[in-house]
Image 1 (cartoon, rainbow, N blue to C red):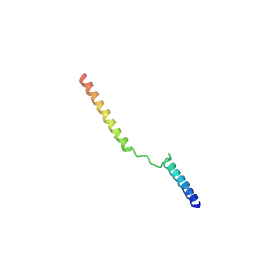
Image 2 (cartoon, one colour):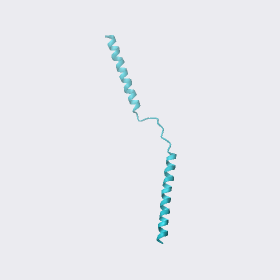
Image 3 (cartoon, helix red, strand yellow):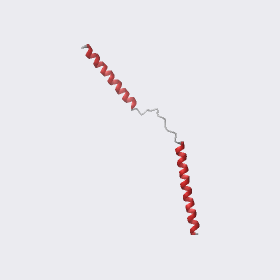
Image 4 (tube, rainbow, N blue to C red):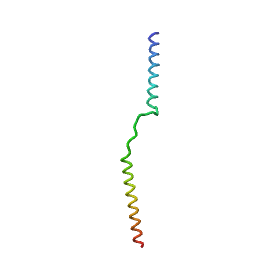
Length: 67
């Protein structure tokens, strides 16, 4: 019977350790760092500037042709 009791105690401690590891893995307090998005921001600004500039040029051409 003593061997059975030690096995039960070992299974309980293993179960508790597994639950703790699951809780720590799914906790919202992760230490992951946010990615640096400065290059993305610059690329979007350049693309937006190009689109705006092309619209302004097309609008000026429209005004010149209709004048």
